Length: 505
Image (tube, rainbow, N blue to C red; front, side, top):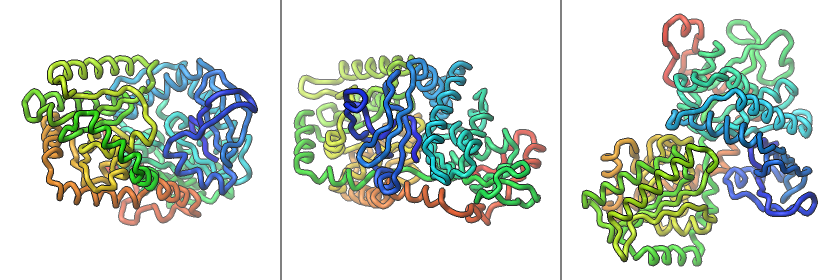
């Protein structure tokens, strides 16, 4: 059973039995679809439309159970608490988060609605996998009602350092909500460490390696496979909290890149841009975490300094619409479009535009054509759980060419060491990396891209989901205690002012 904010299908038209649905393009769907069909899976989520109610239905072999959200739910739970409180907080307060009690109350109520929908359909001992920051309270709600369930949670975005996380007024409730799971997955080792540190600081629970020991009362948890007596003689339920870096359906991108019509479209894109020597590409949701402004600033300064020439180098920036009713995002769009207009006005010629700015989403086929056309891929996120665009670009480069400039603040940077890693806050360093990418010899480009492609094709989204489920259905967490680590003593930590334990969990 999958529980996520959105369903794996999008509503096209019609109501009731006449409703028409199409598969969502997301990588999560591609990863889980085969297993869901094989295991008679149920997917619980919102249809993406306010005040719309649909009965359960089947879509391509998967049982779909829609959860209805009112317009106020969307405003308070989704746009409010999820995207104007948690999102900025979890992304290192790049934008200031808003804290409103009515948003929190809506978040609790909607999480309860998702949990109840899962409980209605869950067979004895069912495996329930809950996804992302919108539903962090669901694991505990499920655990309290049904201790027999096997519960996993995956956090697709970063988990912040304790000094930042501590700002959340409901910090303890969220941590307790997540600890209802048997396995909590994060994108990076540092995220898992930040969570374990929050558990120690807020609840005083002991952590050993990737394992967190949750104390139990009396006969609570009897018969559960992860209940044991710890070193102190106390009965605890063990929770595994570790990194499971997500990936993409790499083979699908490789197959698309091999299609003659998509390759022809890539050549056409270059011609439409005036056949520049170098095409630089940015592909992002229009979000303040993506570092679009930093990228534009660096590119504009390269043109100003005459380090590059608009006749030779052009930048294509795809910025798909995102959360346009949230005020912070409205302001960001105005800032980005003003910057693009200024750079184009200052440096474009009649035959060559400095920046081709595209504020719209594109189908996967068009994106692969753009990836093939681009000589340099710019991923300059200020904070990102993973960033799958970097992996999509690499998977699409079947010609073993192209250069990836990648922010070190993305989860992808942990795996993609052959990219040109940058600190996007360092504008001079970013400019130098962009020039290096433009001037890189073909032999070095090919060497780096081969290594990147090997990593992405080997560690694909199917491997990610299989690894998570293996951990979720594992009989014991003993292997994850980490024999090389010293068990953390919360009493000792509390006796030292400001102590937060080891650097990583």
